Amino acid sequence: MVGLTFPRLPEMDFTMSSTPLVSIIVLNWNGKKCIRPCLESLFAQTYPRYEVIVVDNASTDDSVTIVRQEFPKARLIVNERNLGFAAGNNVGIKAAKGDLIAMFNNDAIADKNWLSEMVKALTSSPRIGVAGSLIFYHGTERVWSAGSRLDAFTGLIWGVPLDGRRENVSAVVADVDFVANCASLTKRAAFEKIGLLDEDYFFLNEDLDWCLAARRAGYTCVTVPSAIVYHMVGLVSGDIPLLRTYQHFRSVFHFYIKHLPVHLILSTLGFQLVVTTFVGWVTLKQSPKYSFAKIRAFWWGLRHLRHILRERGQLRSLGKTTYPVRLGEVWSVTRKWGREGTV
Image 1: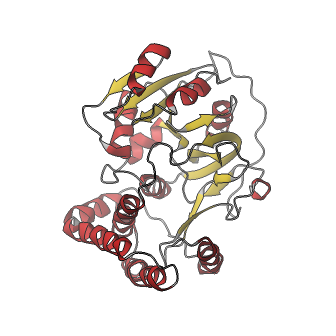
Image 2: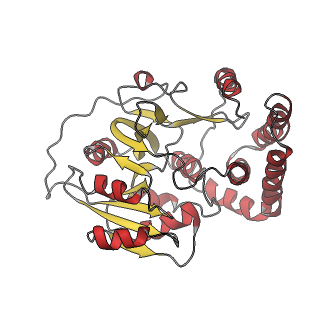
């Protein structure tokens, strides 16, 4: 990984009297198939001082019953309707008692030392505001996420390492553009300074938005390669590609307008609306439905432009930052995606 690196973390002897309380928020929606192994892994952590808060987003399966009957130590909050990822997690953040706040997907499983490694990293420097995990696809050694990078000229976002190989993950805590809230740990003080997750992101890319805001506030975002999580990708959300396409582009268009300088907004919109659409049609033989979903998402951004511009003004109060242009890496990214048949 390229970027700021920190020394290898020393061993720490955590005791109840010397460790910060951590609140782990597990957002659940119809997680009957995965909530049990998720919570079993969290209640098996070696870190001595934490609480688990399960926030249910109006599930229609038996997952709430499983939590109530089998995990009485978990604090359960049941929302009356599905608030989405950002707003659902905000409910948990508001209820949290800890000085450190973790967000954890209900379809993820933590190694027993996950929380100890995350706390060591997050508390090793006042500059670190949020830490992310080394996340593998469940049952494999293939990396799903070790942090992500952004090219602000094209708007492309990709995970590191690009090839998904564990041996290409940095051995030290490494600075990245943003980390996945699938398994992240954040200082309460950072939330107090920056604010909660932006609830306009129903799901997808709220982590990108918040981490870039954190950079404006002077924080760094790091990946902790010794904090291991396994992710059952897509087990809950299922295979709903058109919905994901719409939600993804709705959130990235929102992000561009909210965060980027005007010249980069124009370049990213042009690339995403013209170039990726053309490639999808001609090279990947994508259905026109995907393009229409993208256009609907862009139209959503236009209809909410005044609101997003107000958010843009509020963002400036946190400070200034630069947005990375990485055209040298974009070629490798697009070649990989072309081989996989994705845009």
